[in-house]
Image (cartoon, rainbow, N blue to C red; front, side, top):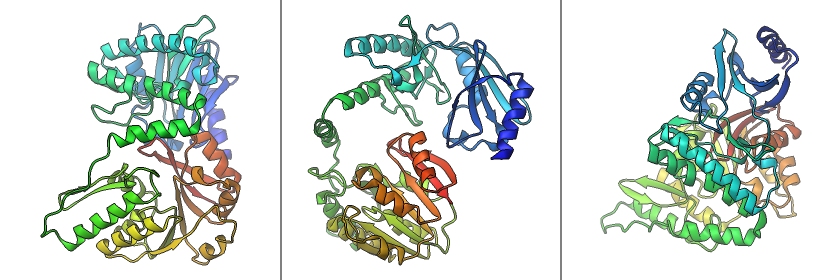
Length: 421
């Protein structure tokens, strides 16, 4: 950390902005900083220490080129200069005076006016063949006079006009590449703040229900493995472990030409998780395992020594056991309710895991403090949160983790971290 601070000091001195004000610095990537000096914003990357470039479509030069391509469009910050030295890269931009939409409390009438102005900006950059891909409230600036600006083009990409419109307005992933935010997404987030949680959950279920794919119909001569998977998916669909009240499994997977549908493609999940660290010969504890696919795949394909997978739902554990038989692996399964006041910690500690997975689970636990206190007992953690990276990073640091690396965003735009003491 001292070495990094020394590098920042040297960098600012070389650029000639020693007295610049720090506007933003990611807690999970301290090698990136945004500074204000005079009437210009300096986006700076310490190249040797950068750990999140793989999460961005554009490096600073790519962002500079896209902004140049969109130059003269009202509402887009003007790029001033880009340059790179051995140890750092710098993008200098026009400073936009105003507040980001996330920090503005505006009524629905004024919000619609802001979004209409934002829509015009989106339309104009789409005519230039650019899709922003990261239209979040944090990236929309509103000036005191009511002018609207769209900033932060490090996730932007070249695109056809109609594809860019569909992506930016509706958040529909056409043309490939990950989407992080859209205009309609801003509206949805605002609605979630004012509508009761039950109403938003009900609306979400209706939307999901329209996209449920039926289970495959198997011929009489289908293999025992495929028939067992079908049985597992039928159990998973009826369990309460995914979307209570809806018949849909949590994961989807394709086997022998048959599609077993679910809310999230398992193969995408596995692509992200399998390369985070070396699992060979280690004992893994999976908290909130759902269908048990992670433990099964780690045993079968990552040479894990042992795996203990726990969940609170008895039915989903039954489905997980069937999947394990098909994959010819033998993880340990156990039913654990993290909101049970009894001592569930001791029997999990007896397993003595080397690595703990806590993916997409903290949000659903009532006693979060107790669960986090349990996580802090381990030296190596792979964690998926529901909140922003700043909140999650602080949460993990507060329980004792010193190395907190942002690995990726999940298919639901949730941050996934690799943490070590």
